Image (cartoon, rainbow over all chains, first blue to last red; front, top):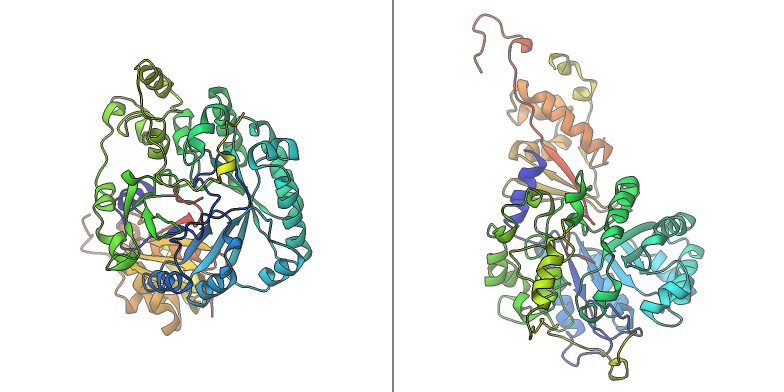
Length: 374
Length: 93
Length: 33
């Protein structure tokens, strides 16, 4: 069986996710301008510790090997360590994504003592100026301190995760050097216009010229850099990037949000992509296996307006989150289509007098942050 | 390809690494190594059967025989086992 | 593929190579951040 057949099988969905993202809380100490979950304030309907453990029991029974815990800032939860330990004790490896604010020397030592645990520190600039413009004053220092504590505690290789923006594309080599200096693994991922990203996308997303730069850099460095398979929309530029090169949403991955809602992926927190809730009868397993949304995502998808384009096999029409939140139809080009078809489609949209682009269905942004962001 | 029957790997005692879990799938199985986080698709029921049988047989060749794998397919299987050893999914006992 | 009825040396028989294992990165599925 070829790799092509493998992706055909995966697109039809599996009986359990291979991996999933679980946002433990909408509470966060930061207010990043592009936050995909629009986090800030805790939601009073958050899953309790007992409910969270029941979800983990289900994932164990489904033989999900590995989960990505995030938020908001997951370490804000008082039961953070209890849940992580429960997870690994039940055979579910954990990677958690954090801004590092709560990793002091003592926590670093505690984390270093745990097995089957990976850590991903978010960083969007190689210096405070670039990073803090997106993630807030002091966030660069916060992340660097966390990395230093992890290094001092001999945690081993952690991941540094970067969302690629117009402002940090020129810094890719320096991100790599930073990761190398810590013996850490660099991860670079695509910015989606999701969550607060809906409003910051226009000035943050890479330019067309930069897309080529990103593609070339990944082709040169991709062996040692993780991408979460998030750049397959660039495959039309040449040979395919390493990876599965397919959308995993609702097929091999999904999101569980802090109130138990199950979405196709973390980048589509919107009712249109809501499959169910873990509190529903049948729990997570029933949602994964039988929800209408996931069943529909596992059917062959139409190329639609992209059908006549020779690049469709390579780019798959891009990312549904990118299309959805920029107001583009899902069966057409990605807003960042390297052939320029997305730009044409967006221009046509802009010409229409009233265009209501979708807004995220959950917004936990703290009130004082709801100002115009420059 | 025929000389592959002389592949020394066939005479080795092998097993799945103790930190590997197999999850059945319609097309075979997912193999995940909790230690090194590597994830592999085993793409055929026979490959899964052989992987599971390794620990109970003195050599890879005996495991292949026990699973009824035609000798003409052995080159594909030894190549797969070599790949799985590189990922440490399969190890020598 | 016709099997030679007289001899059974493997050289006479060409069997298609099977791709029995495929590795993917645990980080290699789009939709996880």
